[in-house]
Image (cartoon, rainbow, N blue to C red):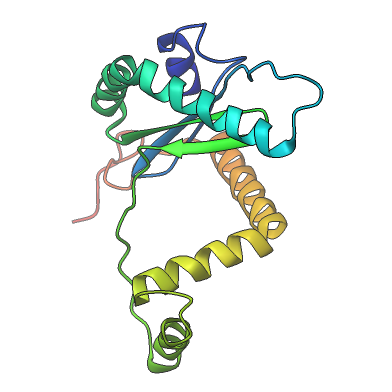
Length: 178
């Protein structure tokens, strides 16, 4: 997927190859764009404002071509494509998907979500659950990274394992039991 996008995207869009991340529903393509030239005396606020403006200009200037690339990618990979850009210290995602997730919660778990709503932290149970997921993601980022790394290792070991016949196929001409 990374290689496909690198081949599709114009070289002048990003400084270096884009970051391409994906799950079962969405592909997110984020590239670093050239920051605006500001004087050495520019404040942090001025830098953030200039970077945000540069990202917005990139978004508008590339919209038609990004849409064409996204349509091709969606046909090829069967996932929605979202975009983002990084400029200096500013990172913005645009056209990202919000995918519904169904879960069953018992009363104590629903009580946690309802408490977040009552406290004004969230507007709905869905919003409260998303808040909880973001909190865990932020506070347990190192652990989640280790978990992903372990999973990738398991997948690599599986791929290197013996190649056996599928359970529905008889091996070496042997007849299946009736």
